[in-house]
Image 1 (spheres, rainbow, N blue to C red):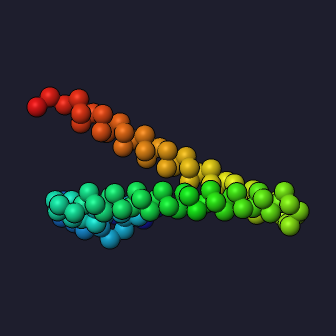
Image 2: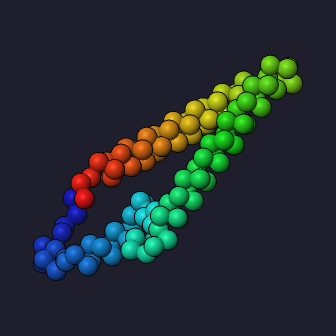
Image 3: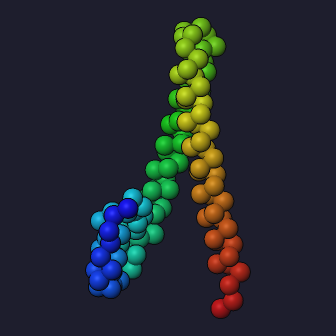
Length: 113
């Protein structure tokens, strides 16, 4: 086990932790650290539209692979299975995002003013 200098741990403060999180975190902020700006909703909305377009592309690719396989143009079931799995996962993700958006909208509408 490596020796740890206890004295160095006492000098850690929130700024150091925040800097380390910014440098090493794999999770990114969808708002790009501009959460207070007015255009953050439009960026989120545009990313949601991009997600829908990507899902539609995966569904179209899966349908095209099914047609090619059914017509006998290909006998590669591996590509068919991959296309179907991509389409399924993308659709599940899109439906989950939609459900959360609808749930958030319903909660906002139920708030008392």
